[in-house]
Amino acid sequence: MPVQDTHQSLRQAKVYSRLKYCLIIVDTAYLLAAAFIFQKSGLSKILVDVLVSRLWWPYALLPAYLFIVYLAYIVLGMPLHFYGSFIVEHAFGLSSQTVSNWLKDQLKSAAVSYIVLTVLFGAFYGITAASPRAWWLIVSVFWIFFSLVLAKIAPTLIIPLFFKYKPVSDNLLKERIKALASKMGVKILDVFEIDLSTKTLKANAALVGWGAGRRVLLADTLNNKYSHDEVEVILAHEFAHYKLGHLLKLIAVHSLGTLVSFFLIFKTCVAVMGFFKVPCVADIAGFPVIVLYMTALGILLQPLAHGISRKFEKDADIAALKATGFAGPFISMMEKLSLQNLTDRAPGPVIKFLFFDHPPIEERIALASRF
Figure 1 (cartoon, rainbow, N blue to C red):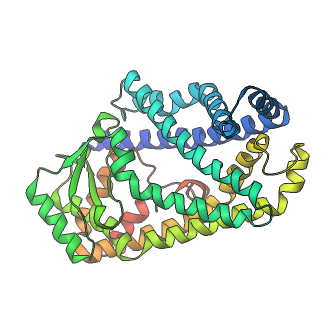
Figure 2: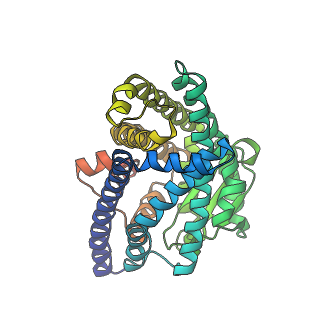
Figure 3: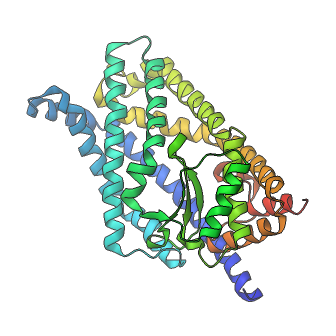
């Protein structure tokens, strides 16, 4: 790429990244404001009372309530979401989706999210009503278990809702990846190509699934842009996460975060629910308060989780470089990815602390240059 084009892409990446940071903040503020207003205005209680008077089956209350609340949240936030995920992505040349395809994806995503919400909060309200003293522990265990189930079924049930994938046709690349996986002690089902180009022009690769169903996914946007050495070192990084036990460690970290979050809700909910005039945590009308809790605790705990993730990512980079010896391809791969994805290569310390779960590109390149 000519130097002038590279400089232009770097400037675009800065503008794009700053805009995405702002959108994350605005989206979070919208969620907090919507939940607070819906609860404090009494609208949540009114909705529950109306549904109770209209529904003949009491177990339909929560699904009906969540459907109406979630639909209202999506509709009211649609302009912001459309701007952030469609207009901005097209403006920076990162999206290939039509409006109709975008809408189809939004409907599918909303349906999956609604099902997940209904299961999680169905368990939450059932357990809080049945076990007022120990609910925080039981709910935590259920939510952790359910997240593991989702991770297990995602490659075969959820990802295919949005993408199609097929075995990689480049047999030489496939054999190199399988040999690398064997070398690093990772068992994989196969190497697949995913049609990421139908949604975005960004590039990515991943190791997904559990046990015998674990598979490598390569975005088709990598085709003809990355050498076999570059793709191999990308996958060596993903395999290193498995070899170093990062997945289990992250599960432990997120499980601890879930336990801490629900324990804090348990210890403070009487005062907080009282402020919002909700009788108890088991009252469905207090759902917006739980949303406020989870969002606020997520904001507080996320920088810590990001810091741990950055440490794991750095360790995976080191392991990948040692396993392959491909320092040059690693650096060229990072250069290409940063330009293709319009990545903020050198964010300030505050931005890095708040938003980055990977080390910035410049840090990763500097690390590789020492090998």
